[in-house]
Amino acid sequence: METNQTQTTETQESAQVTQPAKGRTVRAAQPAKAKLAFSMLQGFRPMSGAALYAHTAAVIDLLNMRKGAKIPRATLTKILGETAVKHHLTKTGMFDIDERGVYLSALGMVNPHWVSTDPELTAACVKVLTTGQPDGQIVKNPIGIKALA
Image 1 (spheres, one colour):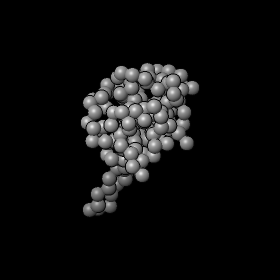
Image 2 (tube, helix red, strand yellow):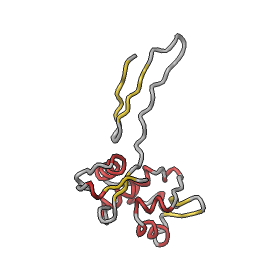
Image 3 (cartoon, one colour):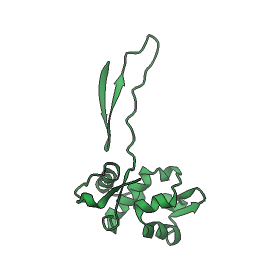
């Protein structure tokens, strides 16, 4: 048995590859996708500009909202904050809500601020939201990061 290391931006998983029996094909395991497990506390979340757009885009992507996922409002509020959720539901029209949760509206799906964000800032936000570790750029102090329950 041989072990191959597959590295993604945020996680590192090992995939075991075994010799297949004659005539059989064996696929290597795919690396695990990074999961949103932490949030930035109010006062530590980006408030404006490129960092805010990168944070919002990272959350949307980690929650699979571009793929139609509906997120309970309470969960999204823990991550983005009540002001942001309310703003995007009532003022910008980027979010819609139904009995199953908050989701991206048609307008939110194409919002240029969330579609073309700074890749370095977005990666920094993903790191914080998936590892709980300060990135030194978006969040410098670990006190501003909280695990989601």
